Length: 90
Image (cartoon, rainbow, N blue to C red; front, side, top):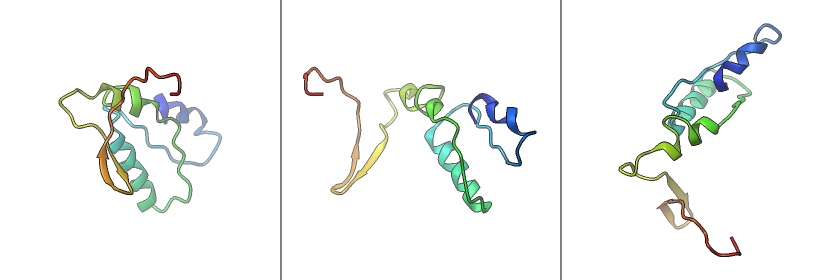
């Protein structure tokens, strides 16, 4: 849950919460999802993926010395780098 917002409703509904702390690496979200699957949960709600994108440890905050995220395409894994588009067709 983002910034503990799920705790606000814990008294009203019967559910469990995993509150992630920094660094918000996308891999940590995957670990949390797998933990929920292994625990037998039928439903997993991710309140926000924004921290995995822009907060500490997120993709935008990774240093240039780290490898970019890998994307698997039909032709095999590729590196993905963000580039600015100067064309009107973007």
